[in-house]
Length: 38
Image (cartoon, rainbow, N blue to C red; front, side, top):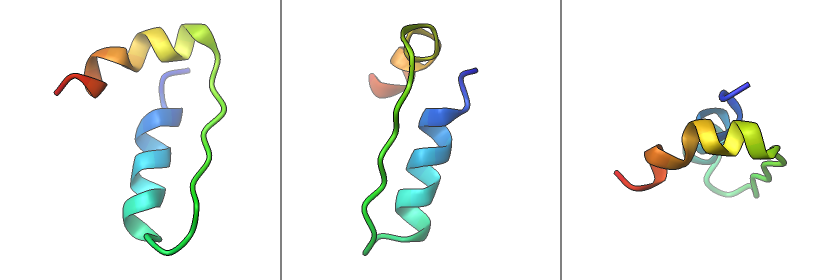
């Protein structure tokens, strides 16, 4: 839990021509919401 957002961001950087989709739950989102502010 909490690894989905960084993994999706890394996949987007690694493969910029492909679409990355992240499906996450509320607990995982709350663990990563502060990363979106920085």
